[in-house]
Image (cartoon, rainbow, N blue to C red; front, side, top):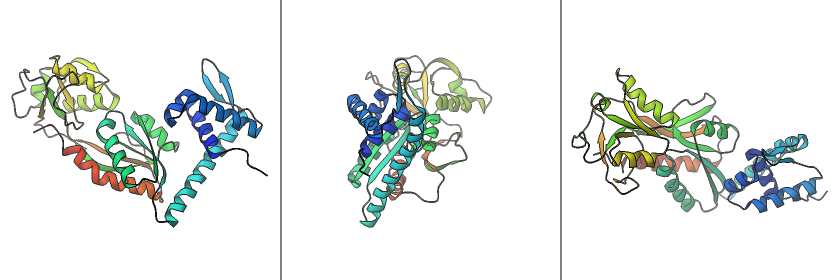
Length: 309
């Protein structure tokens, strides 16, 4: 029996099934929406079955038959990936697809450099990345949408493994004319008396507020933002001090105004950054290679260019 569909069409079908939208799937795969739409139509013609119900307001949803074929399609893609990995092992080359997730707040500081180094070292690899919040990273790991993720060691489920790579210690940042900017370090008690511009993301806000709560203090939250760049810019413009733990080689806010970085003098547990993977006895060689790269590159990225002196 002749096979009238391609693995590319199957890949697009699974991507749309995951996303529930052709536009979202197109963005994730970095291809045009019309290309995906055409591939889905061709696959439906080849299989003789309608895969999706098209709803203008809610996007696309799998038909009952589409749901059954979706599971088989995922298994087919996994088998194709395993075949590629086996071929690489036979030829002693590391290549094939790898999908890496990263926590949204730290992605700009780690992911681009790691991806560039990996693609230069393994030109046969097909690297794809996703930037997401913690809960979404857990979901994507479990759903095999990503192979690994770079994130913090917070609220890690028991079925997901975490390998620590580096510690990220918190620091305070100020505008140069802030009353605390000329100090070599600052205590939490001193900071608590001044207005704080809080990075308002689930993990970050809970972590920074817990630093004060552990020593019986409460920060004076003057303003907040879910965007790291906005926090830096508000601090540089005198709305308060900030608390961060991501590395940065840039001493200025996005608007060009200078910032001053100071370590916190209290003994504080740092956040750990590391790799998430599903607990399994066997990992593809390409994933092992990426993990080895992270062990080598992440520690200096986390500390070697840190602005606190």
